[in-house]
Length: 119
Length: 118
Image (cartoon, one colour):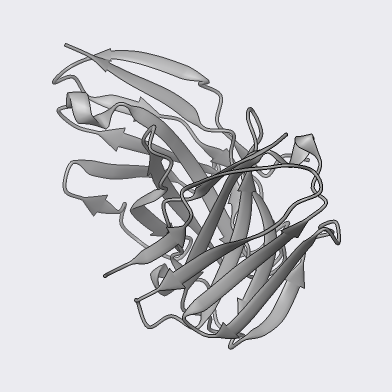
């Protein structure tokens, strides 16, 4: 497979369930990202991992727990979610070059997303 | 303050016509990048085109071009000869060294829903 893949594509869960979203990138990138896209709101950055180290946590509730075991895989563990957490969750990857001016190599490539519904 | 503004929530365009999607941005950083993405109903965000703040020429990628007016802080996407398959949401995004989500995050606009009519 090429690009960025995400599984599952659709997920319905109850508020007491525990589930995980998986993301895998085949682009040789060293940074991975989780974004949340809610209806009628801009995409919101949730987490950034660079070289398996979390470098950004954008005030996300602790019921979302990310994990990055290596530079190709990213997980988002979900537990005791609320109905307002229903959204499209998008994973992205890029090259991360610290201390350099922004250029086209910073382009983030996205997966197809997981559409999450919390009942 | 909103960093990326897309003022057109929706647009209807006849097939084969050219389309301009507006995007204005706000940053005080001299180094920044502007990105346009297309999101069909399937959900995937597809990268279209990039424009860097130091680029001397407007970016072009096939039927996509970027009308970059740095002094006005605008980066409008132009799609030439529109096709039915161009119907989708289009998002303008920016990365600067002080992005709202940290130095690595992209800040997105609210998007424009483009519908191409036969």
